[in-house]
Image (cartoon, rainbow, N blue to C red; front, side):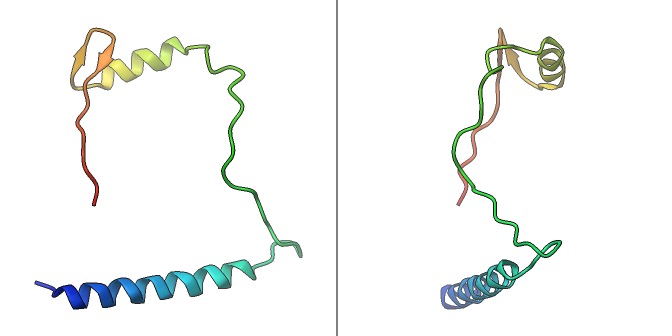
Length: 79
């Protein structure tokens, strides 16, 4: 069993490694240019109302539990 103090040390070390890695990645150039893409925002929903019948059939065929037009799934709490 790992002590709480050791867990915090590991978390701090991992955060430090990730921060250094992120800074190093920021300096990477591809084809002589920095790649910088915006994150977030909204995607276009132009065709969002159109359903794909084949996709629906595959999803329901793979579902272990179904009830009417619904797929029954479990709920998990992540720490």
